[in-house]
Length: 152
Image 1 (cartoon, rainbow, N blue to C red):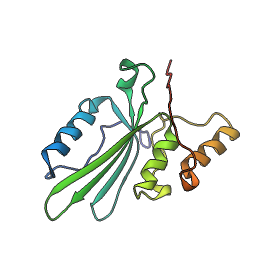
Image 2: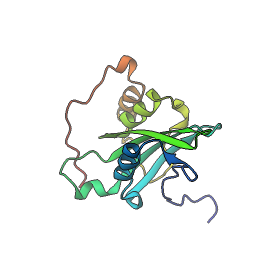
Image 3: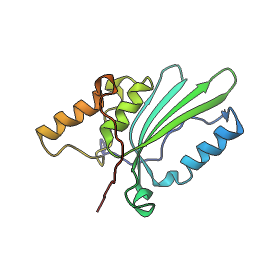
């Protein structure tokens, strides 16, 4: 049906690019090894093709170490002249902290809203306010020291 969301694989936009170093290639392959289990929740790609920001749900996290964070923030930076890329990533226990990390990497806040209807939604107005606070996280005030994510 028209207008229905079709889940897809992450769009890294690195076709024709090589990792800038062997270490970056190894790290990228490690993070994306099971990319068929990575569900894109939000993506933003800059018009100049230099940056991509992805918020992914790692559906394989439930089979890994108990309590592992299941959201991955991924920032890919491309050198369009050299045809190379770098990337940075971080795992998060909740979506607003993943969005905050992407915003701190340079993603426009309005561009990283959840676009996948399968993504988590706040249960009520108070939860939505708390998520907004974590997403904005003024002066990096809120920090996760430890977490245990339970996904029944």
